[in-house]
Length: 130
Image (tube, rainbow, N blue to C red):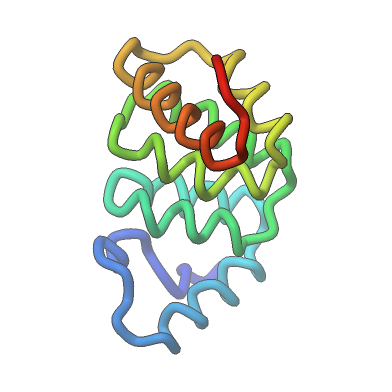
């Protein structure tokens, strides 16, 4: 078995060269699902924004995206709350996304951030109230 073409540590910052980004995304889609997930998981603490971008483009099954969402909600990285919503809500669909969020135990801080940004969504969608 050959070593991977890319490793998460290469992407602490998003590549400045579009071709590198395209090559990574193509390579990631060509790897088995378990390896895609493992790569994205390892990248998360280094560059969560890029991890979210890769989730959207890596053609993961929705159940796997749900598992990543649960994991990242539990991790409690508060500054990632809006990114989780912006990136994964379109992938899973609004109903499914919020069902996972509501069913996942999170820290109080993460819950507050998610609820704050959920409130933004309600205002943006013209929905009022809690």
